[in-house]
Length: 325
Image (cartoon, one colour):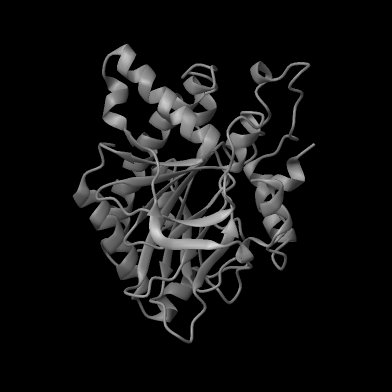
């Protein structure tokens, strides 16, 4: 973000919500074509990561029915009686499954969410809700498919940085996947219009599936909130804090927020991908030299959870800002 957007509270940045923001749309199927075509797609992804921090993907190989079923599983969960959902309530951010609402979360203005780990799926699915009965099956299928897409994107991003698509491959293969399943109510005159306050995501990348429009991002060039377009069968991709660290600032995390939709309740499923819990992320040594010294301290997913625990009441205390050297 620019200096202006760091000094002006992000909630007060001007908003341009009359038209959705045109953004790069990447055809992932072209990554598996000839080398020249793949190179062009890698360059398009790298350009989006450098200049914007976000893009959308189509032809990603996840069937529409798998996506629709994941949204239905999420919607059915949030329609359960409160006592069934509150079975997963906890103050401990390290719980494998955790349900909460805006009453306790420092960045939630009006949302309910269910967060749970998803990789390795066989290790975590046993902790997921058993109600509704479809939840584990439908959400499990989506989790496995979206992780495949994430690994494909990571290869392309690393290639775009000049590190090679197999860079730190074992750490990414063994890395974490956190699903943040969110429900935002329909906006009304008595509600806040903000469902989720401005923030960035901790990991390398986030892949977002949404049921309707409501996502906004800060456009760095204009310091204006821009509404993200809702394309059929597309997934939205965000660059996270740890990708900014790994790239030594070449790729920038994106600050985003969720607005309540005036026409309907909104479901979003964010799949956040990072290293394993205690695995440290550092600036890639290949991207560090005398002219480009390390710009960030090392950190892990565990460090991020510690940061959240220590700053539950201070939503303006940014994790990435604490890593800058």
